Image 1 (cartoon, chains in turn orange, cyan):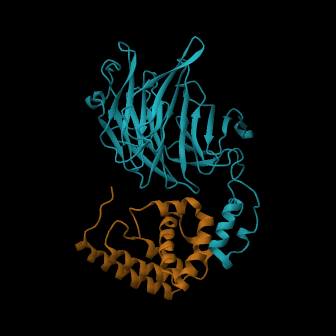
Image 2 (cartoon, chains in turn cyan, green):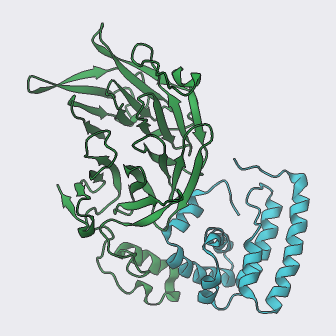
Image 3 (cartoon, each protein chain N blue to C red):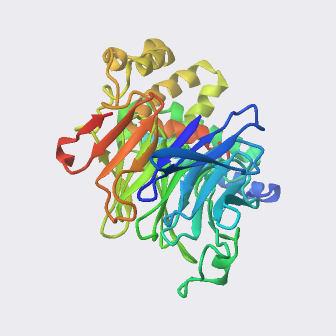
Length: 132
Length: 327
């Protein structure tokens, strides 16, 4: 059901991520944190096995996550369809072990769990096909 | 572990005993009531792994057993030799078969497996089933033929059931998802519904458009399909409102979350000394069984059993009062 993108297409994906990254920088400068996060989460390449693509996208999402100051406001503005993918990135953040990243991810995790419920966490844990 | 099913009107009663490690020593008995006494008949299933689920067919002339050996046994009674014969569906399953369900036509069988897929097979047996003039395709008259495979879930699949007319299939995935497939056939309409809380283990159609799911939240959930055919979560039975964020965690969760969030947590963990989610069951509900007459289009009474060792009978006649009577 999932088509995995082969390595030679990875270049195209990474190029797309670069473009996205520039867009996100400009959004952050305008203090549009929620837009930035949405852009980062959109088009996440879960259906590729290529680690470079995943890492490239993670860097972009990480940037957007760390820039968030008002977590409640962000979650209010974020549509429910993004909850599952955001949760996956939060777990990736928590796995880095880096103190500021973990602090931020933990804060968002608490709020996101309140909103999205334990089912969201379950979906992240059980989905071994589409990883970030 | 034993699984028991009681059926009317033939009053067959069935028990499977399987011991996980001693794979040689498992048996399946068909019990029949003779002169007021229950008499068991041993059925040789030819399996080398545990039996996980069993269901009688609608006409009660066959039963299906799903096993950890990645096979499904279909057993039927051979009058001449006075014993039960088993035929195995060996193909297709890549992992344990967790649940089986019969279509009302007595031929199609849906299975779910820990490989995440839901499949529909034909169990047509010459001499037991007669060729229906309106059978859909030649595939349906070949035993063990796979009619359909559904790839909707990434994780283990459980609890498949057909709707009363056989038009719709529902099954659950371990990722807190429930899947509905309308118009099962060459062009099915699949819907995946994600929900907030812990995964389900079993489902029951109480009408063509309403499904009750039971699972790790110890509280049955109601799903319904609206006029446009979209399925969604409606409510819990036995809980008046959707839980607010703080009251939804039992004390165990509160402690765990307290450790997780450490100094960052605020009032979220301060309350809920002993509040548990479900009123009736304290632990995961494993199965849900209809108590209404078999084949009736609406189910008004059903029973649930769970890991807490309780069996509860639920009556939907007084749905507003959200009754659950413990047995």
